[in-house]
Image (cartoon, rainbow, N blue to C red; front, side, top):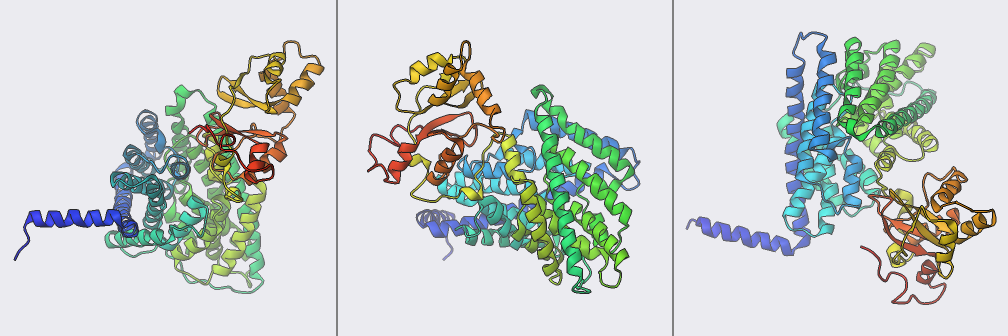
Length: 591
């Protein structure tokens, strides 16, 4: 007997209710759904970008298009980003990590639409950025929208974010294993994260969608390489040094230029992307291979079509073009450009080595291949992902050992010369303080166990004598000071005493804080702690800053005071000063 539509509907509702009550089954089902949907969205993103580019640059088009199109394209997207899609700027990786760590996994549908529209327009017009980073934010956004509309709890929605990230990168790069590795290594910061199984499932589903629509071709077609002589490993080590130094130069240039753009008046933000579009257009008029992500030229270099002078020139121009495009606020990522930059550095290094030692070195294409992973490891700072990604992109295993040597050296140099990773530094420039791997939880718990309500902040205009009178009977050794931007720092009783003893007529707390900051040039900003930091980190910060009381601030805004944590409170949690009281640390902590 055939089931009626009403019967089928009731069965569907019953199955959905069973899924809701079985968390494991629901997670697996949603991981498959996210993988398929993200795969479809990513395929649409790739096809849309290609179609737009074909219309903007028709075959036999005039050279002036290479100047006009990226300039107008960046002007158009700059207006959209400021007026409608403020969270779609840049690569999307820092924004994704912020959504996961701070914003309860919340990424709005509006941001997804804006990212797709702005990135498709930017990349099609020739902006020297890539699609992979934006795809990660889009994938995370799709997962967030599905999770929130399915009525999942906050923790369940947050668990879907890395699922969407791995699915997006698997389809955008055609690298399902590297996509999972990047999600664990960069997004989660933990190679042993519990989302491994669901990330693998969504990555595989997305990859199958990609292959169904776009075929099975790898991103690059690479001839078989082999190690010509054991001494060649020394050349790969030199490539690691070149790649490390080049990566640091690129990161510092990008961050320095972006800091300058951020200091410009807010009313001009919509025009900033034009600087990147115009520069790319002018460079592209003479050197078209600088435009876009440049995968076609990389494929030629990998197959031996490399001229030493051109490789050096294009590598240098790509560093400048990509740094300017990203720093000026265009929508796009740095994954793809980092591969281009690495390929040029590798081809240049290999070209020199092959001229000097032709009998013991391979073709420059082999060094270009290793250079791609080397630059990725130095710029993005995910060495495990880099090795797996190059293997998946090229499907050539014979180059793995030289790649590991070169990657390790580039990663070490990058760490020493640029302490913060590029995504941490970009987030910090935007006022977002993302957790680092070194701040993983340890000990009895995090700062919320010891956090207490902050006393009223002292105004920066208050005199040091008035502040001393107000703090005289307080048990706290330091109090927060408020400026026009919010929290300005902590002022110690001892600092007030020294200022009064030295003659403090007319000295305000604000000027005293400025003097103290000038005396500590190694501090980027006032010492602080975040609620999710471990108590071990709190003790370390107290030791390095000399403060017994630290402000607890939001990761979204370091000037937003959430509470304070005192040394005695931490010691009570560690049971050094006795059992914690129900009315002492933790009571009244602000949300």
